[in-house]
Length: 329
Image (tube, rainbow, N blue to C red; front, side, top):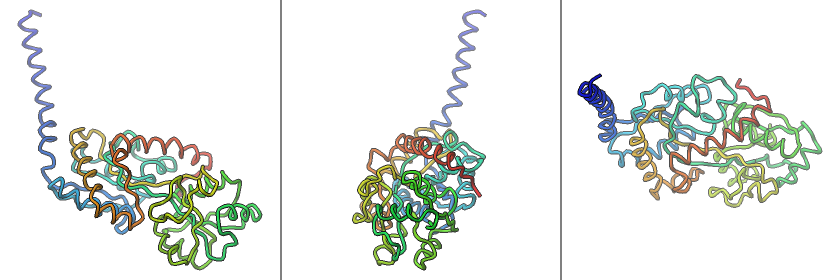
């Protein structure tokens, strides 16, 4: 090939690549040009839905576009998450992901997507530990007394959860492993039903989410410990697992925003910026705190930090789940 022909061919090829890249760059620069859909993979009214709606409100102002919440429940969050995996990677379809959808589900079910490789982290929104709450007449008033009572009464106590593979269920399995105790697992279709039976004395205790705090404050149930190494801002009087002498009992859930794989970095950057600014609003922080959620520090709100958190939880929990033989019902 003569030098002139080679140069002409190279120029044409370079031009073709530039034309292919330009629309993506232009789309990122003008983003967002239309409303954004934020998929919540659970029914309306739940914790993830509440966090999404509280956060989306200020995001609309920073993005200058509507952020439309789309609830799509089913398969423990798997139905909505699968929809996100199939969405176009253009920044106009996002999803709420959490410890259940992006860690646990992949260990207990066969999924039509890869939780690590089919999504791009955008930002961590909130995190929260579980609270070990017991019925009022349980003959144990702290964690040490509970462990002693369980050892003296193997397999007699019952612990309610919101289902196999749920945070409360896994917290219970970890607790049994750390303390060499055994008790019965009683699954419910929702946290409210488990707490209802706890109030009625039908079960002995449960690892509940922040919704149990209202019952604790009312004196209807007793809180023994929160499953974290740091005091829970929403309930600073409840001892931590570290305080109670069981530092390995660390179980924290979280909610974050994810985008489909292939979403341009520039768009991820704009979305992260809007999310971080929303979480910096004092009114938003206060509202989330009132609901029992903690907004993470600024350095933990980056896409990279959310990805690290997800991978760390996978490395911790997948072996525990496998060893316990947990499978989705």
